[in-house]
Image (tube, rainbow, N blue to C red; front, top):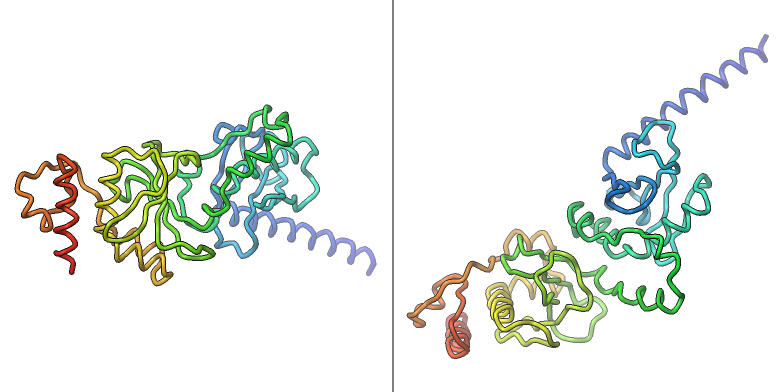
Length: 292
């Protein structure tokens, strides 16, 4: 009799535990963003989250190819790293290869979302979708592509046009692990997506200098004016005195083009688009005196 009662008690405990784990899964997934096949090119859904979950960077992967999530679907975790590790044993070998390649291609983007540097819309817009061709890349080509991930960008914060008013993305960082002076990265095209091959550096000082080629004259003027207007904020972030949240809340945005004839009044205006190089030079000369 005692043995029979013990068997029933064991069954009840197992059922309750299963219910509890289901609830925990749902609570966890409620705080995770679902990326479907059409977003990723993968045959299964994946779920991404930020670092409010107290473990190393990872994503959740659905082990079946159903477009909908159900309680009985099994989920496994996969770490976000150069060598992704599957935590769990229910993912097919084929799916494991696919998801690892996908993570390697999107490691920077997923890491930045984990670190709360970008939003989920930025992730969806910037994802490199999985394609069968990824599996066929020769090792040498894959090595080159991996190098383009630019590890330093995991430490940089993206400031898109909507935050800066500039027509291009810029990237800012602190002075961790660098030996040069304060600078930012500027994208030379106006695409909302990150392009490693279209980046130049600009120094953060009263007379910003461009390091690299490809930035148009108009964009250079806009970026220089933006840096000068926000020099204190950008310098404080570089020196780790403020957070990225402080930067985005207090940025002085670049404004639309304004042609000004009276250059004597330039320092008291917002951002202006100067008609020629002479006015541009005079603007910075006057601004320097104005800020001294």
